[in-house]
Length: 384
Image (cartoon, rainbow, N blue to C red; front, top):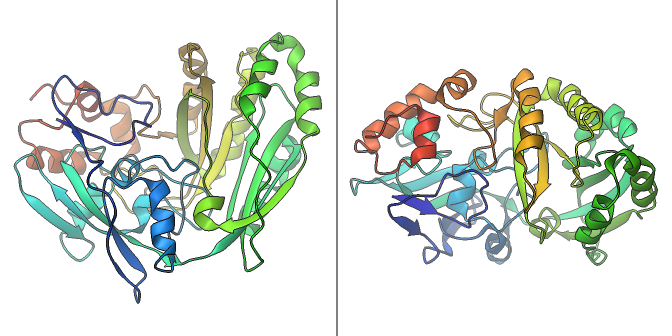
């Protein structure tokens, strides 16, 4: 029995020969408190729908991921996050949630009510039961000035520590087989709204690059991307922080201790170059504040996250198999919703509360009804 959200995850968290539970009809704003700036949503609500609903009551989420198609339940189950040194994953800002176990028991959990279970359930991989409602700590509605530009990757790396403190949200996307990166920075503003330029379809650029032999790409990519114009816009936060991606792809993402993030990134880029990997989608480098969930990517310390991608229709395994050991070398934790190869033994060494979570899972789901083969691998369970 597996709950399914938007189907955005690249890892096999959901597939089952049993029953799929779809939460689409559990959607919408259930209640809110103006004074505390908290709001409760049905867990099947898509993130992209929360922004307008919150704007209508003068609130906004503190941070959002760059894709907003996911359901709330799916996003928090996988420790989904945006970017910003002072802002954490979505799960960090949950103040209460309702969990229905396979036994039909209903738990209303919060920091003041069964705090340990609350910390376990905020990132649960859908393994404890079905989350039906979630309350978030929000803030007053706000606007962000968004700036994008292309800059030599080495300059971006050298200035990164300064800039991640300068901007509320900051990230960069290094182009492989190139000397350049796309930089994206957001800062809070009270300036009038300014519409962004029309979005360009990167698919055409990627298709053009893919036609060029890897050994000849660098001067071509440098010429193409260095000529991209900088842009600036001012939008409501929920619009500024999220993007639409129409190209299908597979993705691997690991979070790295923040002091090791840039050395790890440089080794990944060098490995792609040395092995002449035929990949066109840029990497993505972000930073995330720590939280106190049990299975969060950033549990206990701030992290840098590094994402690699491969266009759908291509075999991603040789590329991902080449890069994944580099993430391990730097103590990386995999994003639960992205491709990775780790099992229980490796994961238990990365998550100090893994055993505690497993005990909760056994108590909530003694017959293993919520466990598909992938989850059994992650938690070290034989079939129950």
